[in-house]
Amino acid sequence: MTLATILSRTQQGLDAPLVRVEVDSSGGLPQFSIVGLPAAVVKESKDRVRAAIANCGFEFPVGRITVNLAPADLPKEGGRFDLPIAAGILVASAKLPQAGFDGTELYGELSLGGTIHGIRGALPTALQATREGNALIVPTRNSAETALVRNGRIFHASRLLDVCSHARGLERLPRVVESRDESGRAAVADLADVRGQPRARRALEIAAAGGHSLLLIGPPGAGKSMLAQRLPGLLPPMSEQEALEAAAVRSLTTRGFRVDDWRCRPYRSPHHTVSGIALVGGGAQPRPGEISLAHNGVLFLDELPEFDRHALEVLREPLETGHILISLNARQAEFPARFQLIAAMNPCPCGHLGDPGAECRCPSERIESYRSRVSGPLLDRIDLHVDVPRLPSRELRGTNRSEPSALVAARVQAARARQYERQGKANAALTAAEISAPGRIEPDATTLLERAAEKLGLSARAYHRILRVALSIADLASDDRLRSAYVAEAITWRQLDRNTGPQSALADSA
Ligand SMILES: [Zn+2]
Image 1 (cartoon, helix red, strand yellow):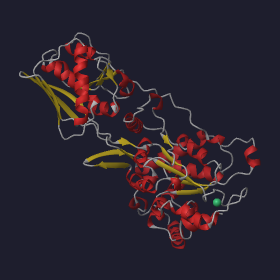
Image 2 (image 1 turned 30 degrees about the vertical axis):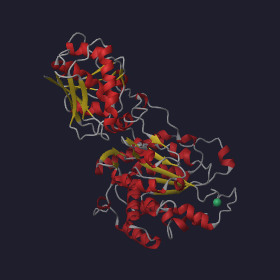
Image 3 (image 1 turned 90 degrees about the vertical axis):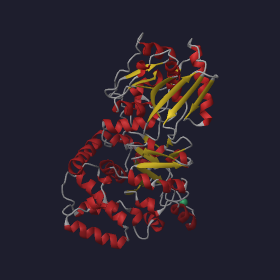
Image 4 (image 1 turned 45 degrees about the horizontal axis):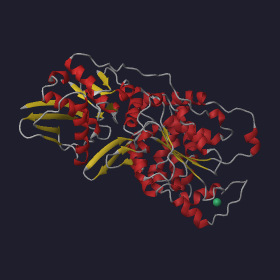
């Protein structure tokens, strides 16, 4: 009886816990069994492994072969374990030396002919293996993304046969060479293309400076999407850690991580017909949703009231915590989801309420039911609300270029740097206790805010949101003191709080 042990990892959210593939080969009646994998994937894996071994010119061992993927209670997907299972069988049947795989993790789905196909999640897997000091053999298909890992000992292979030569010390597999193309910033849309809209541009700048969420309200064609698309270009460059997190989430998707996207702020704009699972993540083998693909970037929800109401309610948790926990039956997976939310809506179902160029004939009940689809608690979590009116056509025809993104981005970066120096995080991430720390706010600013809160009937949440936004306005002004002028401006960005909330507020702007 011979026992072989090959290391690998499964994928659980962004986590990649270690899995030991133990293979026992003993005499007796021919039998090949795999335990520790879901029954549905065992048969396919067995068939692929058996054929791949035979097609590489090895004799499949006679006798009893038992493969155990431990720990048994970890959820596992099949494909990535083909290669470690095949290697384990070859070690257990004395075709390969165990020493050839010591301290090395193996990944890859095998074809019947013994070629190695790529896997999902190679980047988070390689990051974790490297942190724990192991070497890896990954599919060649995944070598570009694993090249992002610093100080990794990563080899890549495209055939089972090459892995065998490597283990025998005959011919080493090629190393994945660490590389990051820092120059390859994809082209981002520029604010210079947006005509007019001084209020909306200002709101966008404040949102970028403090990491605030933003709601754009205006008729169709007013340029709400155009504005939203320009937010990523105003945000500070991603840190390496942020970029790695965003890349790791992407690595879990079917499409995978593309090296061209390295250090590009994610921008996701799912259509309002998107399913709940596609928006927040989930599935039998949990996958990240749009909110996680927008991690460290921007999530744009156009036509906010048209989204599934339940899905919108689920957004409240990640908006507060920066991650989402997905539970399905007994399985749980956590994905990061620290996104900046930009939402847009029409002022009424037809979109023309308050539009001087068109007439709105929506009955008032329809307007109310349209707006009430976005719940108060979600609106409460959006820091800035701004009107985006349709521009008179002469303004659109003007030839004056607006201020380009680069200038705005420089102010945003300076404001962000002040926040990190002062408090180690963006203003939007401050807790209520942190924001109202003694000595932070000028007394007359407090008086102003308290008076406004009473008059507008602001919730405690909205009160703190105003303070966070006022801080960002102060940071843009390079001012250390939170003065009443900043609070006064911040109050103007809570349009939907005025009077009795969303129902009547929009009518006011009409
Ligand atoms: Zn209307």
